[in-house]
Length: 224
View 1 (cartoon, rainbow, N blue to C red):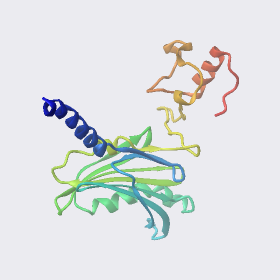
View 2 (view 1 turned 90 degrees about the horizontal axis):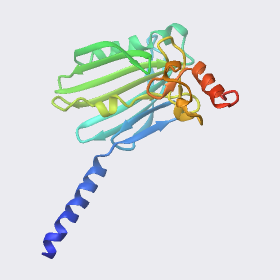
View 3 (view 1 turned 45 degrees about the horizontal axis):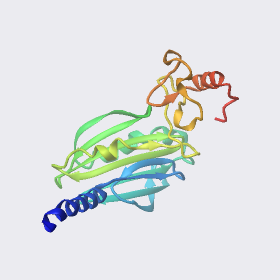
View 4 (view 1 turned 30 degrees about the vertical axis):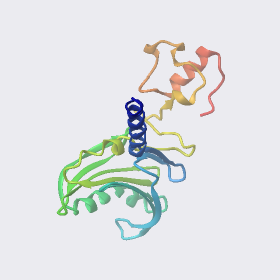
């Protein structure tokens, strides 16, 4: 009987440790302004990135691995590059990755309404790469998941990518290109005014609605 009573507890401990081992971490780097979920703490390294006009640019690469799958984010500093080079950064990067194998998906993409490109490439090594390319305010972000051919799509990694502002706050735009404000950053209740008066999207609102919330709550001018 004593042994029978111990089995559930032992299984519970095993499952708890197994779940902890499988848990992903939310990684944020405010210096180069991005956040993403990695399977473990990534290794960071400085690399050299060659631009379209063959100029070396400073870049950082963050890499983590789980099993046979490798996850990385490269952040390239284009702020000192020529304006035309910055404008062509996404297209040039996509052209380089297309050479890695058979392109099975190649389309426009958006990340919080920051435009970009998304690629899926099958390599001769029987591996697949899922690649997201976005440029924002002089930086290029390249997120790549390199996985075995029959592995499931790396949704946990792909869907978690965020670009941050100088304060480490996630950047998100409206369809009109206006920067949205997260209600998580506010000390006022968005239910103070009706839903019809809000551009309310997954906890984000426009500065105009922020002002309306402040008026409804009797607050002062926003700090943003």
